[in-house]
Length: 319
Image 1: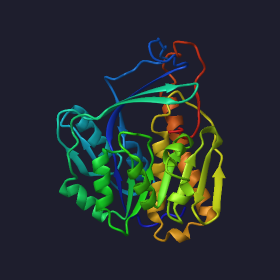
Image 2: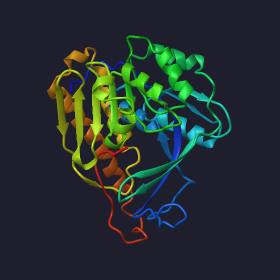
Image 3: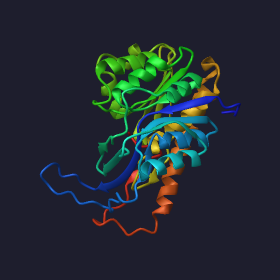
Image 4: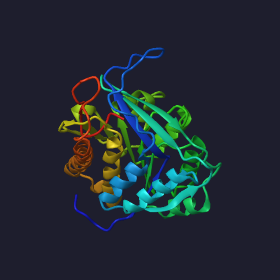
């Protein structure tokens, strides 16, 4: 897509300090599953919306993060990473003594288990700086956050602001009413194939969203499918496989890159089928580059303890 003057993009959702590991076979509860690599919780990665922020900023967007972190070492590191990515942390509120963290267990036969600690940093309401950031944003990329704060984001958004919803299947963060409200407000919705039943609990997705809403559905190794709801327009893009033991953040890199492109388009009607194909290809390429860089960085690490081959990841994770 041709670059143009960046317009303000606010990225809203949980901050997180992430640790990840994997197992070739998850044996269920009350049983022992063998990890393929160490769980390094002493040096967590910068996660949560940081992946979205980094990808959008790398694609030329004028990004401001809106999130919540604790007054601890992890919070300092997280804010520094946002600034180093070229984004503003003006919308990041600091309170409490423990930042959120996540532990991801990737099951190589399929699926991921996430254990999330929300920390002690989430207030009852958005603060004044966060409200100002949302009022100034032309486009808002919203992902999972505390339910009450998500509702306030929707209440705060100007009617002319475009909303991109990066779906996460989290029953604690979304009830059926909030899912419907997000679907009927969003201008674009990005979700993994496995999240479609979550979105369609109250009816077919195509009939719940507004006509003209862009739907981006990631299909794992089968690629990405896009659809413009109600306009009989759809397409798909294949992806190149990447050998990757850790696909954390690849899906967020995909939608962060795509959101930056969407934020540059002042008239959604200008998004032709060719431009949408290009948008999906660029976003997939960014996710693939992340996985390749991570695989290269880990190439010196010991072989997995169970001797299993490396996971054949794709350019973006299913979730």
